[in-house]
Length: 275
Image (cartoon, rainbow, N blue to C red; front, side):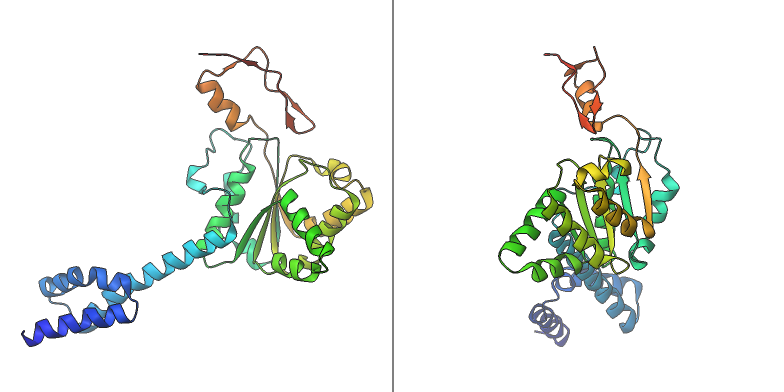
């Protein structure tokens, strides 16, 4: 075996030993480029390690996305702004800079079911993960259950720390179910602990004026809103449900009536047609 081949084999073995998987996979291609373009040793090493660094960034981003526990993957490119003209694209573009996370600010997405609130929340969360931020996504009902279980097991401080830790906490579907006094108090405690320390995104089908009903206590609702809205952006989405649109496209709905919204909930007052 020639000295060049020996060195190449040793390089592959060392890359494998060091766990540099991407460098090992692209080594032959980078060597061919180096020979063809007659580049320096430093540039060769730079090209090899740049691909390894990109692969590691991608793996870490994927790890953060898994840790966030998003219910599904959604990106901002997949959002249909033409269907929801009430949304100011410039405001969303500003949020995508993630300055609100650095400043410990909040984003509240309001609107009826199906208009894209959760899509936008996930898209912002995934962007944060890709930019190195720690994110946790949780449905409001799951959050209350988790905190309640912590309280009953005398482990509430531990549970609180778990939801205090991420740079961005996303609470989805607040308001779909009313909270009892204990649940309302637990949510208040968490928001108070994150106040001016960590950013929160909340999606809700209820207007702020209805939050007294959601928390079954106007005083607690006012205290929560006071902290949430002190440093915040509110995105109020007014439009038709994406899900109803897709059903209509598929011919599953006969529009004898529009899909009514009562107290933020879709009613069944639409005719269902069979193909």
